[in-house]
Image (cartoon, rainbow, N blue to C red; front, top):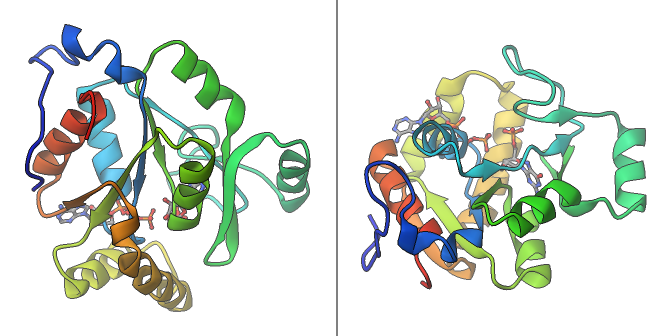
Length: 205
Ligand SMILES: Nc1ncnc2c1ncn2[C@@H]1O[C@H](COP(=O)(O)OP(=O)(O)OP(=O)(O)O)[C@@H](O)[C@H]1O
Ligand SMILES: Nc1nc2c(ncn2[C@@H]2O[C@H](COP(=O)(O)O)[C@@H](O)[C@H]2O)c(=O)[nH]1
């Protein structure tokens, strides 16, 4: 839980008072398996007006993932072209695959005044901090290291070697928590969503 939140929205969604502040760009980062996608899914279910960027990745789709929904799945050559054309707001290599945020859609949704959410890794969050200093950077932390391992292995989507790489990256990410504007501990998805929505529409943190 986070202290000092300023919940500005009512039961129907983001409130009148949030109109200006909702133009904010929010970045959600945290170690693999902490629950970022779960939280983002719940945010979108409760507040469809929050626009979630769909990243490009060179990772293979997991069973159940659809091109254009969870990610735009691309090959290395296509990713290279996006980088060369400066079409990515940020990008990074994570556990053997590349991931990036298409620039155009983020900029147009921000211009349209919609709250914009990016779910990206630490390296990407650092790049956004550099290029868009007004963005709100939120770190999602696990209740404990043991629970993080349980969630990542329990998800059952990665081979043991990939889990090991992701846990190596998790150690680095957890050590960088202080670089973020705010930490939310993902004990309860509902409570994290309440807090994150409040942060996304608060005039300042
Ligand atoms: N608060 C929670 N309590 C218990 N389990 C949770 C909680 N939040 C998420 N989980 C579970 O943890 C697992 C990992 O969640 P999720 O896939 O959302 O993580 P992630 O941070 O998006 O991971 P990655 O960065 O690898 O994509 C899932 O099985 C999910 O159901
Ligand atoms: N820097 C970026 N990181 C991203 C982006 N999209 C997702 N991610 C992060 O990658 C890891 C692994 O994701 P997974 O779907 O393979 O489990 C995770 O931390 C994501 O948040 C992006 O566009 N840029």
